[in-house]
Image (cartoon, rainbow, N blue to C red; front, top):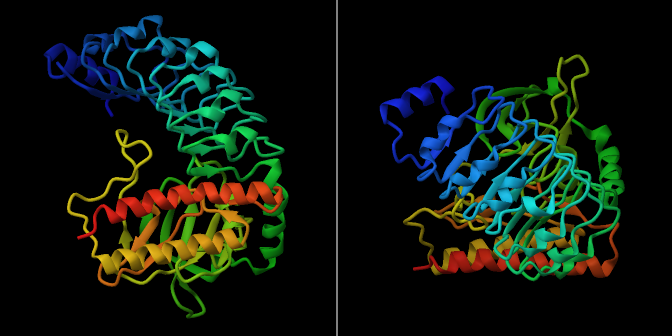
Length: 405
């Protein structure tokens, strides 16, 4: 990230000649025309966190542009020029103010579309005419239906619908031939169950002054995790503090409800309790208490890269013994079966959400940020969604087995 002045100086000196990536957050109110000096080489452009509300019609001059992030800008419409970008495949407009997505605003080569946290009520049918579409992030909008054409998207594998206005499961979801990762909590079709669970557990919430926060243990897309000591001398726990009220997968309230509803399982990380909000604090922090996992655990893989889109990135030397792989996969299958038995979807069965011990092969499935409670859906739909999630498990098994020695 750099200032506009620094960018101008680097362009003038030739330091950026041939640049393929630029990230610029400088309170911009207009698209910086200086960037056109890189029109023949730029492949990734990140203008997130500015004050932009439009893009120039000649953006098409960026003939090599494949990735465009313009999140946290006050756009009210997805720019139509994007539909004329021949190579653009990843588009991110998270947390803008978008209400309108027109039929001609979608790039023909679109693979990954992020429209999380906007004000969208309707999507165009042309979204179902993008055969390369693999990842569609629509959480926290105002959608009540999906374009019918999405039902036959041949490669759509990950779909985020949480925090919208779906009163029933869109029929297109069950028809998607490749769908493996779905988040749909926080909609009218699940909200009653979520609220019931949170209300039932309110009396068991821990108080903030019961814990003393210690060092940061890690962080993810939705929050930071700290070690915390119980002031009464009990065992240390982990404290997950949510970053914001809305995430790419949904809301903290939905995640907490799913975790509490799931109960305990030896290979599933679920909360012990919600942390009661401090009424005297200047900002209301949402947090939950988790068991502290034993040392030696590490993520099985890294999250998907821009290039991999819906597939995790394993370390170059990642290898598993046959016995270790079988043990790991059996434990993950057991955790998923436990969730399904409780009428739930995990929504994010990925290697990067599995913590494992390379010395023993023991594994824990974590992160219920995309989990959904299915109890209000018809039984046939619950079964179909759980069968769909088995595709994610099959992808995981194939990845692990491909690295056996």
